[in-house]
Image 1: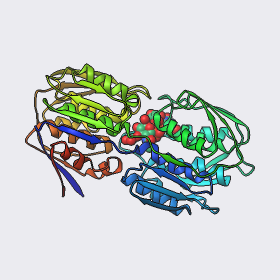
Image 2 (image 1 turned 90 degrees about the vertical axis):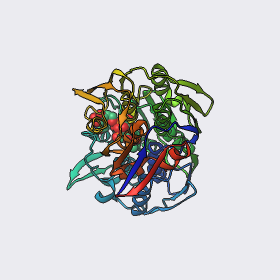
Image 3 (image 1 turned 60 degrees about the vertical axis):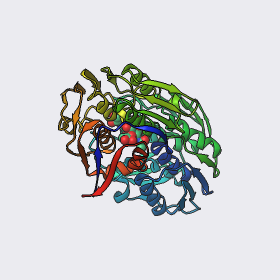
Image 4 (image 1 turned 135 degrees about the vertical axis):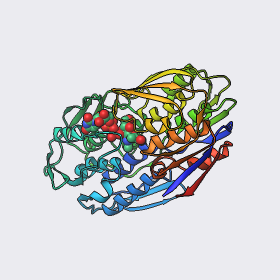
Length: 422
Ligand code: EPU
């Protein structure tokens, strides 16, 4: 297993290019199964999760070719009915094939997704939505078995849960509804940019969709979809991570390129409140840190609120803002596994229910720490950038699921960082 070793205290300077969005491309790959015709997806990041999804599409019978960030999917006529445990259990996004397989084949058997370190990840909204389209669903031997022998039927579906809307449940129902008879309304739909990207791809495939990006999506079912060509949006979470990187050490000046500033307004707002100078361009954000950081009060919320996928990284920043900051998690109340590791680096964070109370310090001290999930791994690397001495982030395999060459991108900005075998 690899570890990342960071020598802290270096100012970051220069430009960094943001890759295509992981959480956009994975549902797009599932959507490509909705037709037998080939599709081409561009700006596809080379990530472990993309490789896992490629394996799953191949197991389902599609031909897939991936090189130079371009992915070609040729689903062909005969798809298999079963998405197996060994692939779906490793990555929740693969559960998205349920909606597309059910719509295309009238039947699907998809393994229940695995447990997750960031807390419970139920699937009740996915199942409620697909049942609402007229399928019958049963759980058999760890698999979700969905059947709609006479095809799916458009319907009014309310997709709100205890924690608000669900991104991947909306994606599953949206994909399934494109081939249903009649019109579907998804109320309390998620409106994250990754879903808008999915809807745009489906529209290129011939789907009739309105309202994507709002909480009410209208889908008029069509008989068939065709193959399409699409470029994935840039990754707002990677962009936010590099913006935080540019804020960790006084004197840093980082230009984040090829991003969508309008997708990261909540992050821009919080960094500005912390005293960071931000300059937005059309596809760039420049981040400059001059003085001491101010403390922050952050609550994670569905888009356009502050994203849960940047909570850990922002916490790393507040550890070096002298005074008390508060971060409240409203999407995954247990997503605080990074707290004990950040405390090993010399700050004091207390958990009070779904809130973290952070007593920021002037300087962190480098330490060996353990990465627990994807975003926590990034947060520990960010903390290492600002720490005195060496930080070793162990078990970083999660990192490769969602960040393309993060250590190379950081070293191009002047960070002293390397990957080593444990
Ligand atoms: N929820 C339910 N029932 C469901 C589905 C979700 O109660 O059937 C709850 C969840 O437990 C959570 C909330 O609804 O409290 C929101 O979860 P959501 O379903 O939106 O999460 P997701 O679609 O499974 C995607 C991202 C996550 C990101 C969340 C929230 C992908 C592949 N994953 O997951 O990304 O945190 O939306 O924005 O798109 C990451 O990239 O590190 C990551 C975890």
